[in-house]
Length: 200
Image 1 (cartoon, rainbow, N blue to C red):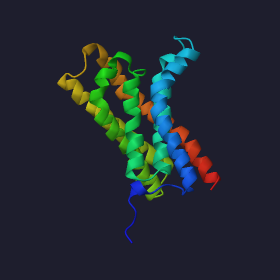
Image 2: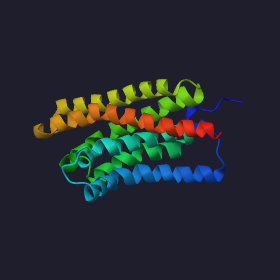
Image 3: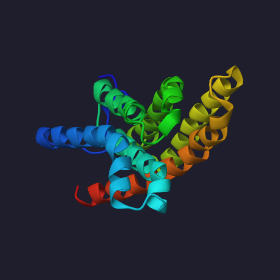
Image 4: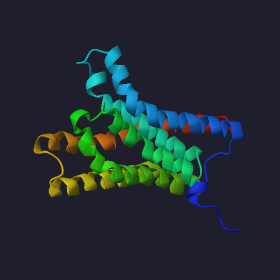
């Protein structure tokens, strides 16, 4: 029998009901966090607080954690592609993270999708299929994801897609912020990973 592809494997097997519940939960996080969390934080905390001014770090970290948990726990192309594509669309539609730059982020959507998929697939390949170290999968996945997104941003910048006044902020958002949020997301997902291992 042919070995299952990495996309169709996961760390642990779950009952059908647990599988459905966690799929719905991960989808809701991927959809609602980028769309609404920024506004919720603004309603709770002062506008000048670090929680509000750095909301992209919080939102991005949660989204990256959901991508990694999806890599470990979901299987099948439909589920994976849904999780990979949903956050960037909801972020741009919501307009909370990138504000006035959101319209220009449409050009970045393909690179963000590919970057997110690279992170998920790296975990699928290294951790799930090959049973290698969690953090090895994370480091490789983060490097590939950031390289794809930051590389695409620089190509689009050279073409002249982005207004000069937005370039500095977008350069940080597509480079350093991507690396930080993916790393924090990896650490959050690691806690979930260890808890699942304990209960198996």
